Length: 354
Picture 1 (cartoon, one colour):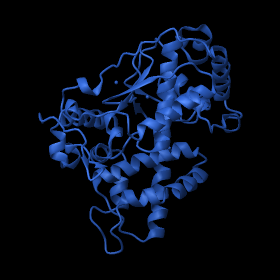
Picture 2: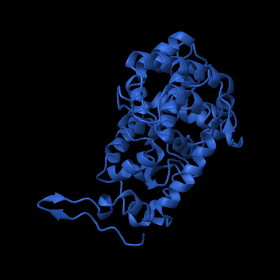
Picture 3: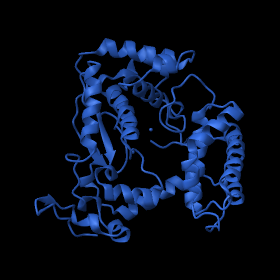
Picture 4: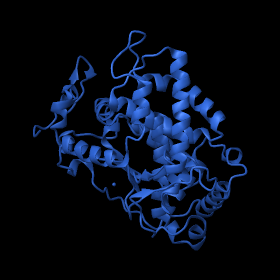
């Protein structure tokens, strides 16, 4: 997985800290602020204990690296810098609300998803700090990190050579992502990868990572740069410009191939039976739909869930509603999900993201 007024600092009122002045703005006014106007810090946010949890997991493995973290536009770990850039919106609930409203998703918004990405980016940081990708054994297992990153990649959805961690079979995007994803699965304190990947070729990669980490345990990193790349305080563009650019990239990577089926299944306006949106319905029945279609098709639940997530996002974009009884909606949604899962297996292509 690269408005001009300055917001006032939080002030005390009646013994309680008020939020920043911009936190009370509506979306349109908020979008006109520059990143430099936000005055955001990681300290005191929900990010701080999550980063500490990452450090604790690294300590438990005797890895002598705590990647430094800072706020930027997106998630990334820069070349040559063993640190982690974290998207700005995770530093304040109002910005997460804006992200959800515009992008229909908040990447890393929950504690679990945030930790998944932190572990992934820590894999990149560790690779940089110890120059792991230069090792011949690393290259034999994952490939050459010098391989160009693709604009798109065609994942092999039934392959067992790669771990399943972040969305879109991300380990298959590039050798460096394969390592970062494998490391993330290995690092998690509650990981049961020995059992979950039994019989998978990916298990040999996990075993390699375990041996590699044992070998560098307690060792000093070769690269210790603490530089911050594209820190938020130095980005002068407005949030509006940021989202215009992000939306353009998103649309380029997501074709609306499921639209016709979704419009047949759902309605463009609330019905007499219910005012539930199609996205809410699919989210509410997600676990059952995923299980039923996985059993029906014989595909891994992870694969089905990727297709279902695309359907949910597209329903939100199209503004669709459920207009049929619950049982009929479930049956037709399962049939549509099974159809698009099959099409996805045959034609699925992913735009490179992280």
